[in-house]
Image 1 (cartoon, helix red, strand yellow):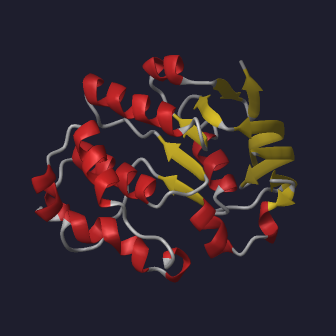
Image 2 (spheres, one colour):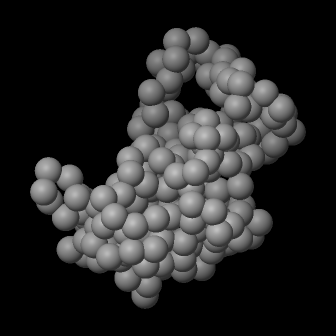
Image 3 (cartoon, rainbow, N blue to C red):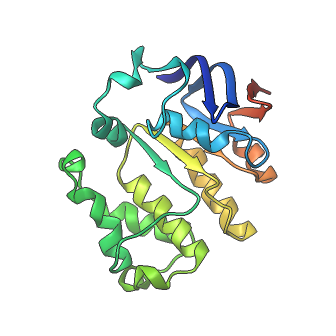
Amino acid sequence: MCIEFRNIDLLRLKKVILKDVNTVFSKGLNLIYGSSGSGKTSLLKLINLLISPSKGSIFYKDKDIQSFDIARWRSICTLTNQTTVFAEGSVMENILLPFEFKVHKLKTADNNLLESLLYRFNLTKDILDKNIKKLSGGEAQRIALIRSILLKPEIFLFDEPTSALDYNTQENVFSYLKELSKKHICVVASHSKDAKKYADFIFTIEEGKLRNV
């Protein structure tokens, strides 16, 4: 089980974002480093079919991901952005909202897992009744992570998942993602130097080139 990039180029407004990327993201925690604007987020968007490559193809289980129905693909592969736009309502309503979508109709939220994640990410159960708009940046970031995890996709994509968190909470999150990656492909874009100790595979992006280090 892997995601394979074959001869991927990505250009935007004649600027080279990614150039001749040939790599494999395997089961485990795949950590991507790079400066702001280096292409980390673009790479995640390519996997999630939010954008298309200028050249080349991306394969999952030897099937070009462009051949998947987009809604179906995003039930298999979820992207958690650095900042998430939530709907009006409570935290719990926002957590449950994706389960109402047709593509997730066969999924149900695991309440035991929810409680476990709240505890693991240093949140209390009473946050579920809180208005989502009243959350701090760090709280919102953790709720977005929890919602994605509850959807139980095959592939997890995380864009700067701990950018708004304190050190101890950041460690808890990466520790959990490490456990999660034992059975899933997890691709994480992060600036955190502490993330390296949890990574199974480390990549860097520089001048459009992706390198395994």
